[in-house]
Image (cartoon, rainbow, N blue to C red):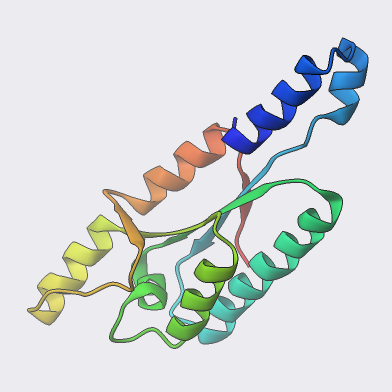
Length: 149
C-alpha cells in the first residue's frame, strides 16, 4: 500500500467514518507491467503513449497507477544511452509520471557487452534486474496487469 493511500485511509478512520463508508471511499490502485523484447521504435513509442494515456485516465478517476517497463533481448535498445531512438521521450515520461520504472535485464546487458566487447551504458534512472523474464513473472504473481503491445 502506498503512503498516499495509507494517509488517505487514515484520514477517514480519524474522521470516524463507518467501515462501509470507508470501503466506498478507498482508492483503487493499479499496477501495469509492459514487456518489450523488440528493437522497434514504433513499439517503444506505443508503450510510452500507453503509459501517458493510462496515467491520465486513472488520474481523472483519482486512482493511483504504477507502471514498470521491462526490456530484454533486442528490446533493451530502448533503454541504452547509445542506441535508444526514444531516449528523450523516456526522460520526459519519467519526469512527468513519477510512478514509472524502467527496468533492464542483466542477462541481456551481459550478452550485449560480450558480443560488442564493451560496457553498455543505460539511460539515467534505469534499474537492472538479474533476469527480465523472472521479474515479469514476479510482478504477474503479485497481481500486476501484463501488457505487450
